Amino acid sequence: MTERELNNADRFLNAYSAIEHEMERILNLKDHRRFFELVDKSARVSPVIDQYRFDLKEYSELRNAIVHDRAGGEIIAVPTDEVIARIERIVVLLLEPPKVSPLFLKEVLTLSCSYPVSRAIREFGRMSYTQAPVIDDHGNTNCLLTSSMIVKWMGLTLENNSLDIEKTTVQDVVETAGHEKNYEIVSVNMSLFDIPNLFYRWQQEGRKLEAVLITQHGVSDEKLLGIITNRDMPLVYRELGQTNQSQGD
Image 1 (cartoon, rainbow, N blue to C red):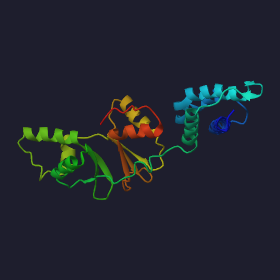
Image 2 (image 1 turned 60 degrees about the horizontal axis):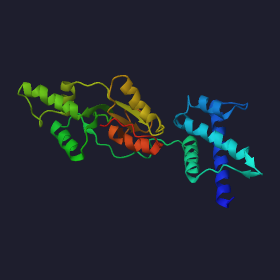
Image 3 (image 1 turned 60 degrees about the vertical axis):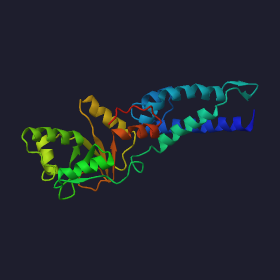
């Protein structure tokens, strides 16, 4: 057996052991449990284990082949480089799960309630955005203005021949078009794994989550540090090693 094959076997067993210990920690177990049982129980509370539970059960079989099934004292099953990369990736995700920071920290386009709607339209067109947080005079996030709200306002005001994009404020548009809360505010420490769950939960409730806004502690009176929208979901899934399930903007 080559040195590389021996190294792969050692790396696999080290990664496997790290995952096993972390699952025991998550479940606060003091006694030994079968690996399959650890996976099934941990998957209920850990999005990482839940995502990779089928892989982990296959790795359990491979681990047994490495440790127990030997021919003349030689290891008969050697993990491939691809398997090593994947199981070590699971360890990283499990021990150091990615957060929304720093990946999605960036300057956020915000609009003041007193801005003329013409400014919002120009900013949307220039940046190819379809939404932006509206900030009140105290710097608090008031709501989220969307291009759909602007279109609705235009339709209503055209009927009354009162369309004026220079004199009408962003606040006027919000009040005329009407709005429900269409965003979530999260802290910089939120796990990236929770973001797809947020969008999915809103979808299950028959609502559309337009954006996830990021502040230091996840409250509306803090400076906005970042934003995640539907168009960012492919990047989220790629970072988590998941299949792209984005529903589009």
